[in-house]
Image (cartoon, rainbow, N blue to C red):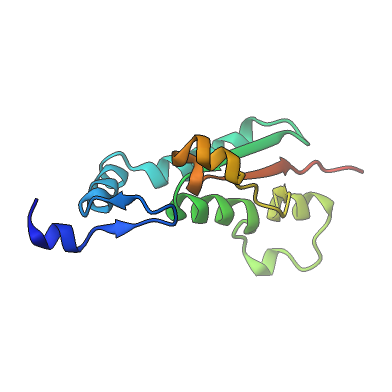
Length: 133
């Protein structure tokens, strides 16, 4: 291994070394497989397929996935502000389609010790909102 690659190795919190090319190959894989768009579209489709009060649970493993999941669960749909002066119940459910459990569940220290790959995992849970009259 070259000295430059050796010098750029990262060390994680547990003291394990990470190869210099790891993040480069991860970025290439994410781009080639269109992983972020796949996740975004999958979450949109999940909302369409779920019944009211249905549960959607997502485990993400790196910050880009964390951000996409958080964005989909916590942002409202885009809508023309002029068409929505006083939102009724149906419009509110359309604007904010997910009811999110605010906590993000992360693996315990024991889990990370047994399964080091779980160290970056985050579990987010959201419920499809139902419109009640």
